[in-house]
Length: 207
Image (cartoon, rainbow, N blue to C red; front, top):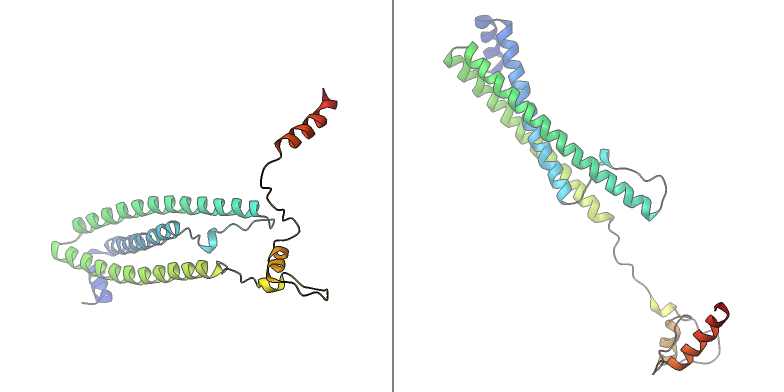
């Protein structure tokens, strides 16, 4: 018997109240399966340090500190959504169990078993559909995160030194110039006596 014929039969045998009870149970069962898959998706996000688009906080200023604050806020929102989804999942599970018990009490044993079996079959299809959808979402977000990571930039060091003179530089000279203007040769020994003398002359006016 298909669902339409089954529900029509229930309506005729037990009335509209029983039919509404069955519809309520089916609705709760579907929501419960959706919450299961959504919670799995959110947990996968937090493990991979990925935030869904609707929870991403955009920094108002383009600084590193602002981006860090926005990332932390986004993760906090993600954890809060996980907490709310867990609570909603628990509430929906209780209601689905309660409506199933009411169906068992309101209908005959055979009719109740057939109704609950139909609802279970429908719920399984919803579970599979939402599971596939959430997996695709998770994989897409992961690919976007991986593609957003900038690859190591290639630096052409051959252009670091440009010889504007007529003199040809040897390899050692080019290597030295590549070190930049702030490069200083490390002394073979630290001139401790000279340093102490300069410090003493600098602090003497402060005494």
